[in-house]
Length: 521
RNA sequence: GCUCCCGUAGUCUAGUCCGGUCAAGGAUCCGGGGCCUUCGACCCCGAAACGCGGGUUCGAAUCCCGCCGGGAGCACCA
Image (cartoon, rainbow, N blue to C red; front, side):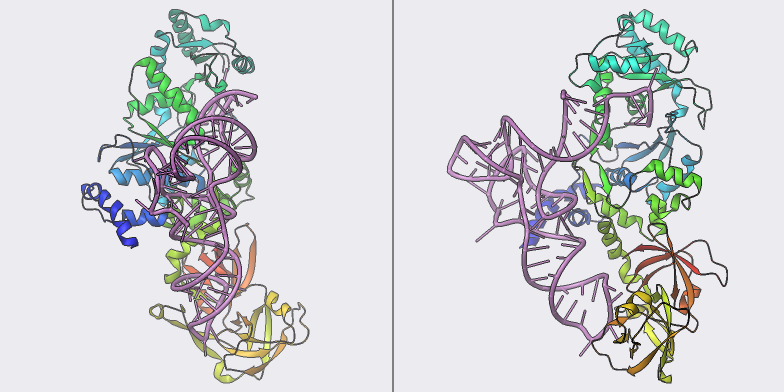
């Protein structure tokens, strides 16, 4: 029996779970349904784990960052650990700059995702703390000040050739370092480099830069510092000083592991172990962050919650729950393999969560008015369930014939045919159907439910215009049933045969269309 | 080119460390049927995989070697 098989790993997990303080025993179940595996953190002790996430404040968090968020959250919960949010806010580059607004936006994203850090740290507050570490490396003869222009430095690195400064004694290097700090060099005029091995087989690892000079205006500290640490050096310091016990990051940062370890070895300090996850791409989500940035800034996109950005905010706007996102992301486990998944997988996860509780409503895209001759008075209004399988969600009464809005695409496909207005009655369509502002005329045939093509309809009486914002950023104007006029902001509906939509925050004024955002099928 | 990582059905994933219980499990997608009114959900059925080639072994998805394919890094960005 399958249950016997499942019982074994569960029994092994039990001690860890009860140690968590009587947490529910549903983790094995979650792990099984999610699929993805998360190995134990090496040497981790319950209650002692300290993790850190390090976003760069140059944009809001998107689906890709979701992996960072939920992998950390997973381990934090598993080990009852602490989670630090450390803004990696060194000045960046001309193309990729830290900007003021993103600090709060990212914090907001974390909250939205339900991953609230225990502590927030700004790297820009810690700049002076990096200098003594740099000095210790210099004193050990493991770092030197190089004045090669960037271009030459790169070229020599590729060739494995040393520049003259590499021969500096620790004393000379220290003097040069002091000159760097005191402003003797212009930006780009000198860098502090780690002395590794110019013959290292990996060209990427040869004498990497530890600190550089930047005159970019920093959003938090302005021009207070000119000498800034590079990412891997700053982490060699901070992972130790902040007491981080395990470093979890994407595999694009693997070489940084080696750098950090090298520095720790030189200095004789112990640092935490590293774990990585692979690259994650959602097929439909164009990864172009710079494009999103441009379009948001220029106003082409409707802000950072525009569906085209695939930001966390945009998913929320579309009615995709963060629980669904979490399950989706956790299903990939800690695999180093690069994954590319269709968004449908995320949609399926969301559907599982909202389908049973989401009210159905009628909506007709590309509405064409159809007047039905001989339509019985008895069917002028009908009562319909809010959910076909959940009577507890109640019903609503909708106005029906004799005039309807029907979707043009469905109409155009079956001229002259008899069709069924879903849940209502059968009618015969006219022989010719052309898009026209004047109503077309159909004829009532019968009431009984027969196997006929079914069309979605909205009774003209009381119907409201509905504006649907699509995933591609386009707006479609359709017609919805009267009940939609009372829709509350953020309410989620399923437009039957169309998909799940969420009502916009911004309330439309009377007479304006009801605004919704398309979520997914 | 150099370095590192990865390679199970269309897609994602379990299994690979400690070879047999894997004639490979789950999810999603796709096809068919049911629920006699959603192109949704639910239920049933079906299709679908160990990149290739050697080797070790009684036995290999699991170990070894080679090849092929994919990704990342080789920034005074993060």
